[in-house]
Length: 203
Ligand code: SAH
Ligand code: MG
Image (cartoon, rainbow, N blue to C red):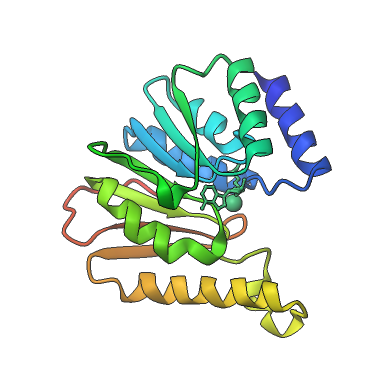
């Protein structure tokens, strides 16, 4: 298992797949353990790296993860099978905005797909959260560019950074959810319902 994870890290590096940073995945794994998380929904599988890592946090964890890119999807299926985790990680090959998860509820939703669509993902998938569930979002610093907008030359990149800023504003102004931001890895946020009385073991 450790060897497969290392191999995935090498593959990600060689193929420019933006897998989660180690501090961020450690934070999420700790949250899973301390808060007895059982059902996880991930938006953006890539090659299955973060899903496999989350599954190793506890044997009780079951993950549904969504990926729209066929090459990444195939690589993820291969990696999940190699780890013997295919009974606990279900990979859905589709655009997350087209997926229908009727009836399912998740304790943790991890948003890590197209950064320009974060508000859409949040608004769709908050409906799949258990009452005391949380939504974690990755890459809120977008490789440090959110704090260094002046250095951005590409229009596309500036567009994404502007959308991340809008998402942060959306979270700060959200009437149903409270969000805490953490300067960990590439920047992550934790959102939970304002009326949720359950204590969250986060830090
Ligand atoms: N969570 C992974 C990294 C995901 S990278 C890890 O940390 O290991 C982002 C992935 O989201 C890419 O593979 C991309 O193809 C996928 N993606 C982007 N927009 C998507 C969408 N709308 N639906 C499904 N997958 C999407
Ligand atoms: Mg990420």
